[in-house]
Image (cartoon, rainbow, N blue to C red; front, side, top):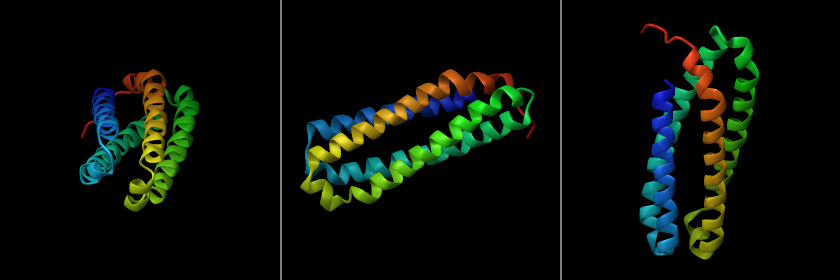
Length: 139
């Protein structure tokens, strides 16, 4: 599982880099492209969260449950906070507002991206190693 999660992280990072490039290279005229990119990113992120949640559940029920509990708890809290922040971002940054304040939008996106990158780095250092210790269940 950690291998697939790392692949997801790498794909998400790549999408964020491309998104940042489009925002730096273009202005509001790129909104149709940005909308497509937002949708693709959201889909991958949602799929990734499902896989990650399955791994966290396995940790809580597995042989490293005692060691994993505080990590899983920290992870859960941080993911809820990040998800709420992302939801607020989507609500606030409507296409009309993006057109009016391109620089503000770009700054907000880059800050949100940095938070997600920090979270993925944390997961790879703290969560994924524990998942590698948990045997996979037969399907």
